[in-house]
Image (cartoon, rainbow over all chains, first blue to last red; front, side, top):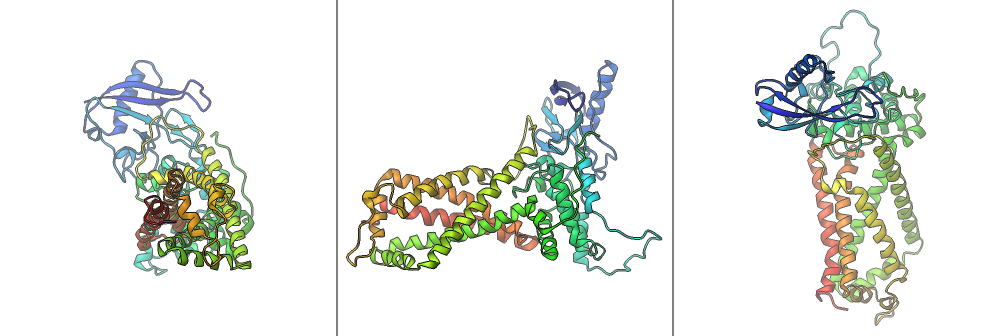
Length: 248
Length: 236
């Protein structure tokens, strides 16, 4: 099959001539979307042109590196699926496919389709952890946790930090990401010690990075490759209120 | 890399929490809860137009006779409107700044038309609110309908309403405002319930249903009176 890719090309963070460029690629319906970009890049390198920069790592849907907005939807046309798991059979032959980077003030473009997502790292560093003395791994089930609680915490812990929630949100809000981490740790006994300050510190860092606020449209939940529920945002609000009341 | 290495926020205090995005959203939700609550009560009160002149005028006279309570309620509503607008503007500006460069192609999967139109419906409603107060509270516009009394000497609010809404333009303005309020309240109610943390897990569907229920109730309740007057079903 043959597709026309309209790809955002930007040579660096301050490139003023950045814009969409068209490329025609011979691909195969069994190829993944990223493999199609590999084919294009091999061709560009052969021609002596600069290959398209895009983030990718595990290519099995678990690392959170891949990050493309395909035809206006972060991670492309298939629900609960990362970009790397999208195959060309999702598209028609001769399709014109627009590929753009995540767009947010807090995620500046480094080159082409790669963006700097270290704002997420700074939010996690502000409170998205549990302080423990390191040592030997503790025994499994040393601290009993009910099945329902364990499963809810695990659903929030499934976040891979890809940033699709921010990319999809009309306000470029990071509240699904922040909420998932806050909710996961608030549900578990290990997270209780730092519970009082975690939400406030992470929210303050989230604001400092320049992310927007949640308007409850639900776009984040719809594109999340790990199907993180909007419940994370409800829990983030509750945890922030709780922390403020505790300190008051 | 090149990201603004934002300042470390420092010690978290309740005052700081209130100025955070989530604090502003909570203020938005609490003030909005008051406004939606008032809208529902206001709408139910207006339905007494269908009960005739005596029922409506005695209801209006009771409200006017509340004295201090009436002024506490008025000031409370004014404060809620001020907080709601102030937080709304601040959040809308932050949200706009959060995405300086947009997408060439963008497809919404979940956002609703009424959810996206919150700012617009809010502004339409604000303009209407000023007109509405000038119309029925202050008597500045259409004064010919104002300041008449019924046979018991009470202000004839019923007659004022019924006469006003025989004018199709006034009725149209009220119907448009009812649509704006209903759209705003539909997204607002479910959104507010999530911001307050009540919409989670099993309660989520109920909270979302509450949004559409409030919206439909407000639209039918508010729009029915002016339309009934225009059609001559309620006569002056």
